[in-house]
Image (cartoon, rainbow, N blue to C red; front, side, top):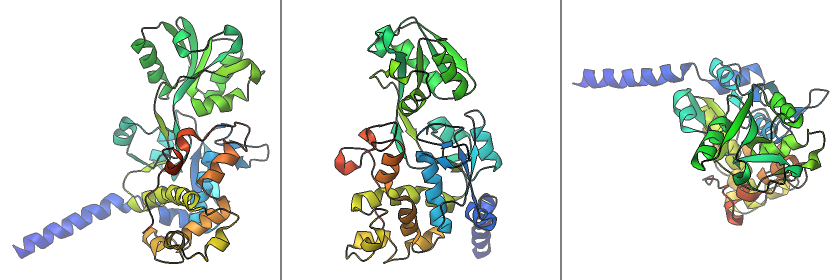
Length: 338
């Protein structure tokens, strides 16, 4: 009986090792000296390169925050632009270590693609944009309209569900890339354009006459956006999740990029644990004790990341809304570090 039990234990341990053997992402990233991050092909406020190849955006800052936690250097990231069609195969194949490019967390993606999804970094929802001259003030007035959208995204299904549920007729006009879709809308090939509301504000900036267009008030879906990584590497998943939680806890505790050094002297147990002054929480992630300090020192807290990229201090001017902290009426809430 003892031998049988021992064999069972060894077999279970072997199975666990085998399942995780091909997924030692942190070790691979450290050995490479670089985080490979799947990013958008270009979405203002979230992920876009300039003429010199310098990337900026909300999602970009998340990749940089992970790199800061690992290397104490947010520049140690290679951004790999991926279309909606290619993003999942690139993650599955190992071309990228993590996917951070406005990807909706759904049940089918979570259970059938071999991925894990992290916390929701941005609560979004699908909306519509129309020309002001059409005098349309509600999505319920879109019956008979032609609607431009992108193939290979959740927007196609949401669009069909909305019009079917409300017994409205419509014509869908699809394109393979976001660039083609917004250009077609700008050229007048459809009456309305639909995507996540964050994308609507971003893409409106690319139109010939942005002020001639408006975003309708209705939100027709839940689009929880966040990072995704391959099944089988719990340590890597913990690093991605706790990068987000560190950003949120920092904002809630009043720790900013500017005051993080002073806050490290705080007597608050929550602040001291966050910044690695007390405890060994970084070591549990396979990182250094000051992992969260590194993130905040280089990138700031969640509020700072939000405001400079998509919020009040950006061109998009998106209100915090659901992405406010739970203490301010929003949905953003982080588990404690303890």
